[in-house]
Image (cartoon, rainbow, N blue to C red; front, side, top):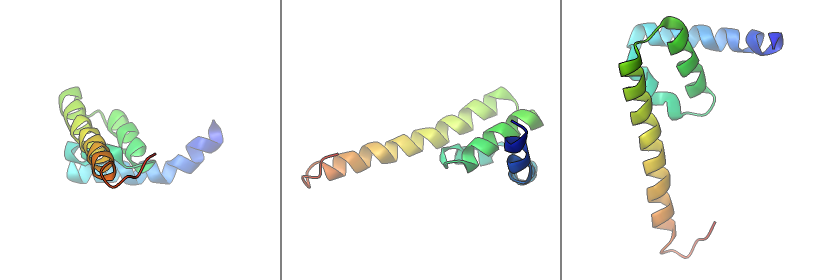
Length: 82
């Protein structure tokens, strides 16, 4: 557990700085692998209110899955199967 905290220290500090600069809208990047999780963690540590938190994370993740669904639909007529 200690090693994980040491690795996440610099990333967490950068995420907290971005959160302080950009505010809750940066949580729309929660869909980004690894980095998005650090933003979510930083938001919890900084104390972002739950309303904006839920809203922006929902928008970010919703856009991700909308893109995945549209990609699957576009691939289906081309005969590409998973």
